[in-house]
Length: 103
Image 1 (cartoon, rainbow, N blue to C red):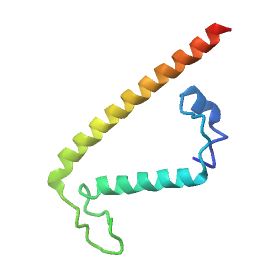
Image 2 (tube, helix red, strand yellow; image 1 turned 90 degrees about the vertical axis):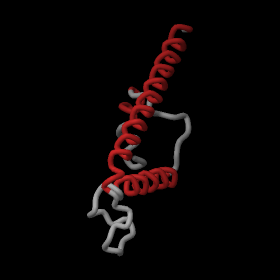
Image 3 (cartoon, rainbow, N blue to C red; image 1 turned 30 degrees about the horizontal axis):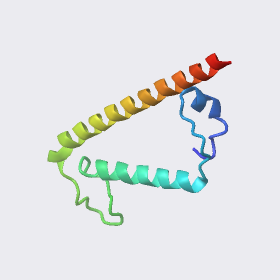
Image 4 (cartoon, helix red, strand yellow; image 1 turned 90 degrees about the horizontal axis):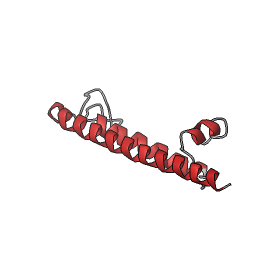
């Protein structure tokens, strides 16, 4: 994202995905690593072929019985994320309209 942020800045602005803070490449690396790590942790109980503790061949976290709960948690977190984003988008649009109506 850090490398392409300038190329997609107009799209990010239209989607209200911009901040006043200009994040460093280190911030993007930390966000990418934590996203990757959480993804592997959530997928480890679901799939036997994932190797979260490489170079170990086995997946000690594999638990097919937990898949229903993990999917429920993922759906709930997705809905929460969508609600937070839509609230942010609404507030951003309202703030822009208020700023434009002043002039």
